[in-house]
Length: 121
Image (cartoon, helix red, strand yellow):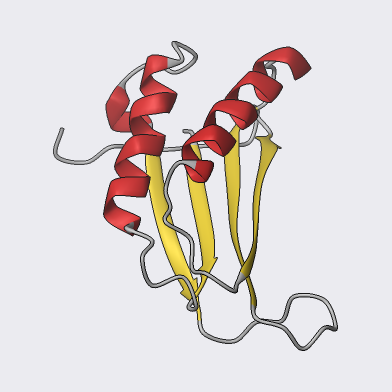
């Protein structure tokens, strides 16, 4: 824990997903809110089928979902959200003529019911 899920639309061809995931993981390690860097997992899913609103113009989005064990303050969650959003904004260039929305949502996982085992470590 934590787990970071990134969804992004296929009309963002310049988005370097590998670099993005590495930068997100580095920011989470640097935050000091997580133990071992080995515990941070991120993944990305490109969406070929999506719709943003009802307009006919070209639109896209990148949505991050950060799931972590419950118990952190709203202040800490907001700091993490803002730092991830700043990285997202810096990932351009964004396509000309495409309205792009960037978002980060922080989700709590129940500490009492989350279980994990690391094999081969």
